[in-house]
Length: 388
Image: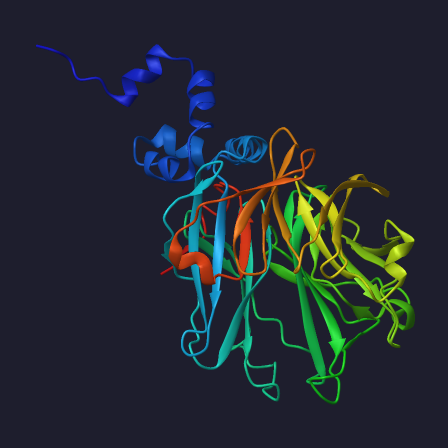
């Protein structure tokens, strides 16, 4: 009688190191299922060292790159999210609708704060401008792994003054191996058309490891010169970054960074003097972990600079004749091409040397999508709560 071949017996045939090596090359969905194979496999897949190994290889190879496609529309719900995987270099898989951990169809808006190592920070806040931000039911923040559908809800931290507005940013503290959310306090202007000014103090940081908020002791640098946040946040090299300017009608002047390990603010110069004019729109992005400054000349050209070494800028490419801003999403493994998103949601690969474009084939229903967030395959938050 032929003996049954079981995973338990396989461990007597293959060394544990080889099993670990093989499993680290598998996709997240497969590893989640393999937790049920045996207790040793469950322990291995949940081991922090294995989770880090798997994440590192996932990022290095781009093997499980996935886009969260966000559709914004009028009515309820105002936002819908879909997962779109790359089946090959020039084609996307079918879009699969996903449900975020919380759902407020009429009274709150949900937005993606940032993404890091396959984790996505999302924030829900009141639609009504005059609604008090002390309402915990309409002010929720979670750290979410959409590929394994697990999340961790942040404890509600009431705001000290109802005249404040909030700016959130999410990133990874490399020194303490911790994922953190920074809550910046901005003074609420008298009308929605005015620009909020960053407060000098009163900022807080959340630690996923400690599951708690602590007050930031350091002050925002020179709120008169750098008190206006112009860009969205970007997380790179263990720090959060914003393009900032003065409170007067002035062009952007510099970058303010927040070190997630020391919890100190600092400033960096922008890469060129051309940013001192009104002709440029400036955005911060991240490619392969590098901080990127995207300088858009409104239809003439776009320059993208990268900080490969902290404090030093290198021009990565120039994209000519772009009617709208093209967001860089992924740098190819050989660094020769960049996956980009046009304003209308279309995706294309841009060859940096040849200066040519190759359109990515996507599902017809994705043509109306305006926002894409790239996530890596990650096992982080396996011990989190299950979403819907």
